[in-house]
Length: 183
Image (cartoon, rainbow, N blue to C red; front, side, top):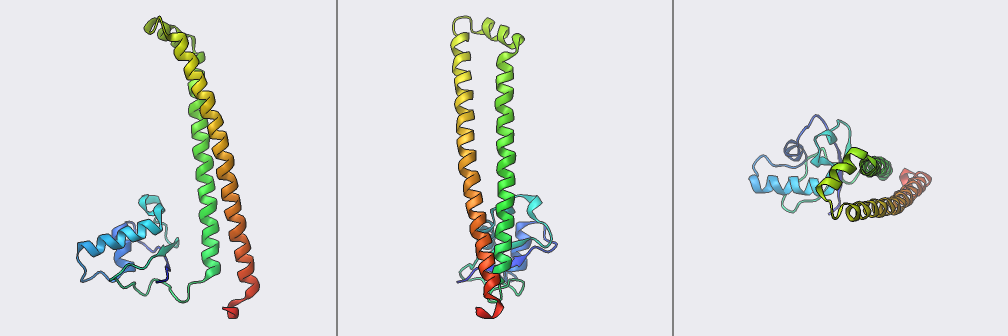
């Protein structure tokens, strides 16, 4: 079965969204939970309250035994709109990646600064008189390895996001070129 596309309205919870997108009036709690799980699996961002923004496009998967409401666009789902949405999601993911990398770098910087703090060094040497030097060397080595791994992962993920974005952009270009009547 095809996935559908819908836009979030005034819904602020996954439960409400599921009731608006699936015919659940006479369904039991198990069907409600299946609908919610399917929505969450197709749209992981819905786990966060701030994702419920009016007008935000989401994917609505087929759930065996449940009918989707007329708010879900199936046959007329605009592939260009879906491509635009995919690009927006990729951009949001890239921003989140950049923020996460920035936070991780900040924590590494704070760790290095702490190792240079004379008061901290004196406290550590007093607490670990026989092993402070080894602990510091191991910690510095761990911070260096963490920074290298972070740089490596950042490069890999940045390239993956860029490649996916290029593919989505190319798909949008092809869809525009084909036109609406070329099906």
